[in-house]
Image 1 (cartoon, rainbow, N blue to C red):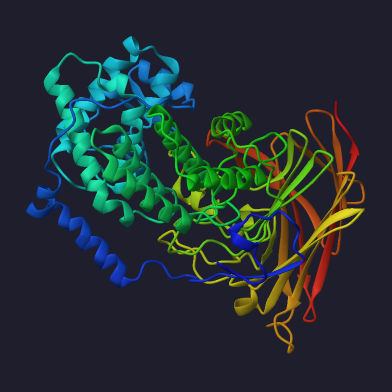
Image 2 (cartoon, one colour):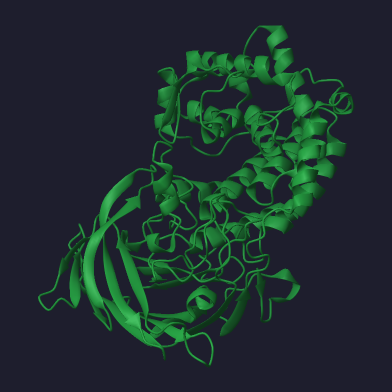
Length: 585
């Protein structure tokens, strides 16, 4: 994404409010080119050659230099399931005793969790070494038998090797406590081979959290395997390059997913703990990147501390975010204006509003992106009021594919939809296609309100209109005012006469909506007793069913406020207001 306007000097991050920006989606609907796909295929085929096999040969360590202290808690439910003999992830469950690594009978997403060994963190959270080691060792033996000597997808994918090296070294007591010297040697031999594989494969991982994970693995090996100083230097250069390519100056991550940003923060923080285990200071770029990323993460967190549900994410709980930030040691404020990453944050007196104010991610850097431009969420203290459906990329794996794909649409977000179409096309292969290319953005702060005005061209080519949205939050936090306008894309006016539109405001399941007597508004009651009044002008209001994906990836029934109308040839507007009439106890 290209952004017009001045940038902070010397690469510094500035949270000052800039008056105007023009944002352009660079790359649009272009995914990997044919040449890129052929190159990647040939690279993976090279894994099977004798040359690559020779590259993996070498001495393997007799032991690790140290053990990293993993600063993060795992999932207790998944950990307890492992104690009961079941490996679970996002609703999918398999008996540990029946897992056949050579003949996978699980989904690709479950397989990534299994191959990453992230479940070691879950097991460590709920069990002692004596309880956990036999379970971890059994799974490790199964993995080694099927994959240690066979270099192939998905087990040898660069990002999975990076994660695996981090988890193996951080939870070494669970996998290296055995008195079986042959088994211990096999584990350490696989670790050394994986590190040599990563030396050549890390830069081929997809940009973003996957490439960061791969280079974290290279550095972890350099720090924990004896004689690793050359690899450490090589790894620091590679990781610096990976961060520069994935993390914007304002701390956001490629693909614009808060969940991916959280993942990258945890990867880098665990790496920093690996330096600490060696009593070494990490390179300055690492701490600087973590600080920027934490500020950006806080910028998309609600009053309950949890994440907003952007780009298919789920509302990861405030406890997880709080524990993550504590582990990073970062002392930063929430980023209010993230031009490069594309989110705007308004916060006044406990009311927090977060707006997706940028073009969507391009196909090359993210599959499964959402057509959510100009959508917003807002919360009142610890209670969410307006939300996105969320969950397209992190929902329960048992949900129908049609539902998870539907969660990516513009209609699944709190914004305006023209003729029941997406502001950016969603292709069957999961990529985003044509739609929003350019946006205009202006933000102003005054003594009475914070105000954002933004527009996008996602409907210009197909329907001849520009969507402009204005949102203002009063300084007392009691009023969220907005206006949605459809304007002619050209001086000759729109296409085909009146343009039907729908404006949706998806409500959190804890909010109960009741229509007012005149049909032009609704009363929104929260569980704490707060009451918000909603009024609209310029469209017809209805209250309809909706769905919200919760922090466990489970769909929950909820409601949505739906405004319908038609935009005339010369353009039309609909205005709306959320007013807090009573604060709950």
